[in-house]
Length: 196
Image (cartoon, rainbow, N blue to C red; front, top):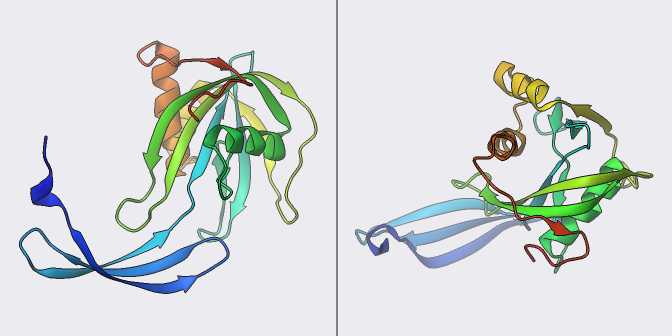
């Protein structure tokens, strides 16, 4: 399938803001019909989200205040990729730092684009099982609670609006399909280069 008739071509680019984490750009593009338009968007380094499965069937979640929306959000553990970091390594690091858990097995589920209209962010989705609890290694200034919920509780929270975080909503759909057997994961030992 060719999508050439939909493609926009870059003709000019301007950096509007360069922060320590995010950048904002304004590009001028040529539309498929030959006209010009501008596209403003945020450049994001990418991230990883982990769906940690406890042996008793519950999942590990976090509750954390998110300043931009002004609410405590219930989410799966996640974090941004450091420069040059492989997604699996990021997922393993974030799971340990934020929850204290390490996992015996990992499976790459896929990836999602969080906000395609205004951000380059891509989030790599991993599942983790065979969890062992150790000490958390929170970053300075990071405050969050770690909780566990059954898949049924999580789905009820998604339905009633308790969970409104996009990556967690999407991962709950993934979880539901994995648990039903509709979607099969390819599990690997933690030391293998799964999904790298």
